[in-house]
Length: 166
Image 1: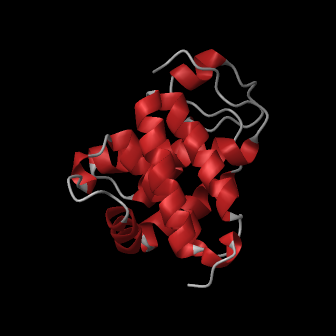
Image 2: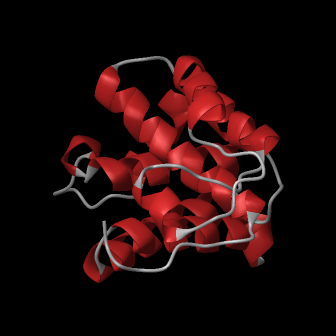
């Protein structure tokens, strides 16, 4: 993990960080998103725990909005095929979903699930939040790549927010 400071005092961001970590774990272990969500709520999301760098390095998310965390995982589980199709549609022909870094794949899946779930939060918020998360875990080149995919997905899924009709 990079030496970049993690967001503090932002429970919605914390929920998204936890969701990315949980989706990564679910893919890696083969456990359902629901099982992993319960593990995270019990062991990684700290109620009242002071956010510090050590907690993040140990995989904990001290400050996270649990209802949002659960909603993102539920959306990713129920809309997984649509999310993956949306991601694939915005990758260059030389890239496959399977070729992506697993953390990036988890972040893009969480973002796609939020974008597919409805009009809230605004698409620009989704882009910025997941881009910050990607920057916290991966290098700048991967962050630029993620920005392009997130932006393209948001424009395709929420064209009205960008002044275009679909």
